[in-house]
Structures are given as structure tokens and as C-alpha cells.
Amino acid sequence: MTYGLFGGAARGLIHAVPTTRLGLVSQSPLIAPSILSADFARLGEEADAVAGADWLHVDVMDGHFVPNLTLGLPVVQAIRKATDIPLDCHLMIDDPDRWAVGYAEAGSYNVTVHVEAAKDPVALAKNLRAAGAKAGLSVKPGTPLEPYVDVLKHYDTLLVMSVEPGFGGQSFMPEVLDKVRTARRLVDTGHLTLLVEIDGGINDDTIEQAADAGVDCFVAGSAVYGAKDPAEAVRRLRAKAVR
Ligand code: DX5
Ligand code: ZN
Image (cartoon, rainbow, N blue to C red; front, side, top):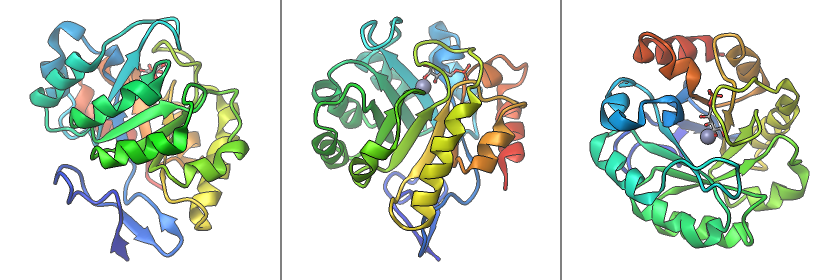
């Protein structure tokens, strides 16, 4: 077993993820609390509240690609200074070809763009990697995977949306798990080398079915920040996702 592209060497921040000859697999489930459900007036403290989380998921919404507006690059730069947790930026924005690289240059660990918005997703992945980040590609619930398998060869993460992007606290859509199973199979058979991430409605009741389908990394907003003890919620979710 060797250590693959998600090893902690680059920034020394997260535990290494082993690869097998079958592709990239995570050693233990990764949990990425979404600060969309945190107190935006206290983002530094809210990052501290999930100490032990693998990644901190940052939802960037532009009011165009999704009908909601959240935060942008200056806030990401400020969060980057306030925490050592690797930032997992999820860009729900138009024209990511123009804007996404700035988030990589700001020191994000992983920058995810939407395939529905990207004009040249292959070039974009190369640019994100050249700027020092992992490259992530996201698909909305209604977007199929099959047309993008070749594009995904250039990406490090695939973010399967399990709600319509735009808002936290929505109900999990189990029908997207077919895409997770497909992606898992493509990784396990060596056709893709990426982590499978899921986002939307992940909580104590839904995380196990997502884990069974083959998810490596679980975004959770309301289930973590709505809990009395967010760090404990991260540990509990991770334990439930172990397979
Ligand atoms: C929704 C965002 C999610 C959101 C998830 O568009 O991409 O990251 O924060 O929130 P929960 O876990 O509450 O569904
Ligand atoms: Zn998200």
C-alpha cells in the first residue's frame, strides 16, 4: 500500500489516504462540516468548534448559479488564516473558469466547481492543480455522471449533490446514490482516481446509506452546527460511516 495524492505531505494537515492498485480509497471516512450552518459573525470560533474535522466545507454562492448569496474570496482568505483545518471550497457560482483559481491561490485544500457552470472543466482542473489545490467537480442531483467520466480523469474529488444546491437543512435525496455507486465502481476498477464526496442532508439517519454506497467524504452542515457539541457530532458521524 502506498500513499496517494491525498497524503498530508503537501500541507501536512490531514491524515494520509492510502491507495491500492485499484485506485484511491480513503483510510477512514472524512467528515467536512459546512460552515453554511455556522454563525457567520464568529467563523474563526466556529472552525475551532469542529476541531478534529477532516475538512472545513465552505459554500460560496453567487445569487446567480443558485438563488442564494453567501460569501466570497475575502472571507475565504480570512477563514484560511483563522484555522488549520483544510478548506474544501464548494463554488456554486457562474463562470468558475474565471473565479475558481483565486480560491486555490488563497490556500484552499480542495476547490470544487459545478460541471453545469464550467465552460472548460478540463482546463479548469489543470489550473486549480497548478495553483496548488486539489480539483473537485460537482454534479447537481439531476445531472448524470456518464457524460463526464473522461473529464473526471482530471479531477481529485467528485462532489455528488444530494440536495438542490443553494440552502442548508434540506432533506437527503437517496436517488443520487446510484451515481455514488457508479463513481465508486469506476474508482475501484481503476478508471478514476478520486475521492467521492456527498453534500446535502447528511445526518445520523442518512450517513450510513451514503457510506454503504461508497462515499469517502461527507459534508454535513445542520447535523454538525445544529448539534450541542459540534466536535462530538463530527466524531459520531465518522463512526457511523466506517465500513
Ligand atoms: C447546499 C450546500 C451544502 C449545505 C449542506 O447547497 O452545498 O454544503 O451546507 O447543509 P446540510 O448538511 O444542512 O444539508
Ligand atoms: Zn456545499
